[in-house]
Length: 120
Length: 107
Image 1 (spheres, rainbow over the protein chains, first blue to last red):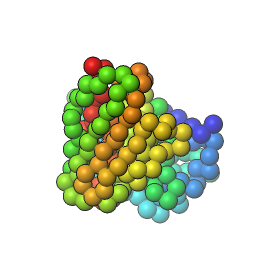
Image 2 (image 1 turned 90 degrees about the vertical axis):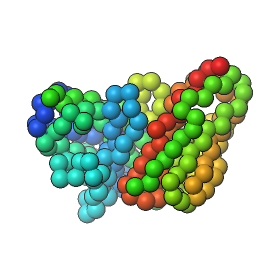
Image 3 (image 1 turned 180 degrees about the horizontal axis):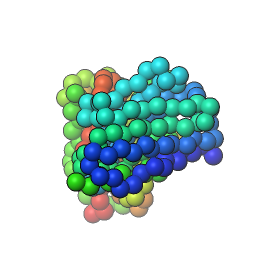
Image 4 (image 1 turned 90 degrees about the horizontal axis):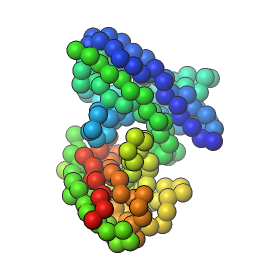
């Protein structure tokens, strides 16, 4: 079964750090661009970051640039999001998502999400 | 960045009828548009990409159309499980942006 499973969310104080992980299974992880998307409670979807298959290309939303870093380990079939200098407005469910082959930026597989709560 | 505007915010339709959801881009996104469905407490699910290509396993009652700045998601013969939230997303230009969502409710 094709699956993405996030972990690492939790409660953290403002200014703190957290690393999210996304374990992939059921497909050739190294062949797909991967993304992080977040959703604040009761709000819509916001794209956060993306990474190419070989990690050579990454992009981050302006709202997280310089604070968050996307990375991957193809040997471990795992995607990461290192989050530093967290703010209250970073509170959200964080989803990892797989980009469609050849399209990259439409997402055909999503994880169940992991909640990050930043307390001020 | 490209602003995606969905209308209406809430759409009331009776089961068995057709629903038409709209999505407008602040500038052309060509056909680089996707639609997602999100049920409460769940992750989004891809319905349509390339403006009109149904994702694998999606029922034929879901269809997409449009190009440039105007897009439509049509759900024919609404089923009970279809009354949830729908988002459009453009991936033509960075950064990727989503619409604010349309809540489909039972009339």
